[in-house]
Structures are given as C-alpha cells and as structure tokens.
Length: 112
Image (cartoon, rainbow, N blue to C red; front, side, top):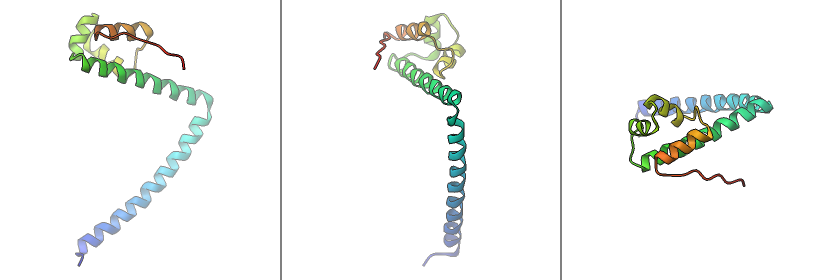
C-alpha cells in the first residue's frame, strides 16, 4: 500500500512533467523563430565550430599532461588567456597552431 506522501509526491511530479513539456514547447518555438533568421543561424553555426575546436584543444592539453598555467608559459601568455581559448574565444589559425604545437601536436585541415 502506498503511503499518502508517496501519492502526493507522484501527483506533484506528474504536474511538473506537464509544466516542463509546455515550457519546452515554448522554447522550441522561440528557437525556430530565432534560427529562421540567416544571420542568427550563421552565428550559432560559428559558435558550434568554435566550441568544437576549443574542445579539441582542451583534450590535446589534457593528453599532453599539461595544466593551463604550464601551457600558458610555453606560449608566453597568461593562464586567463588560455582559459578563454578553451572556451572558444580568441581563436585564429595561428593561435590554434601554436596551441597544438605546444602540446606536441600539429594542425591538419581537411575540406570535406
């Protein structure tokens, strides 16, 4: 036999589930409207690419066994600057190549 508080909790969770579904639907519509604008869509795509590159840089540093401070020293920059790079900011081909080189890697670009 279920206790009263179990039934009350189950009912409360069911109500939350319905609220989440409604909120998700509203956000989905907002997202569709936002991405309907070409400039917004291109901006989101650039951000995705920057984050993918930043993630690869982060993993290269980790595999090299380096802290941000150690890598920053190799690159003659600050740890804060390296943190921004690993968040996808301040990325350029030169920065990416220098970062990779300091981790003992190289950059290879493929056009697919």
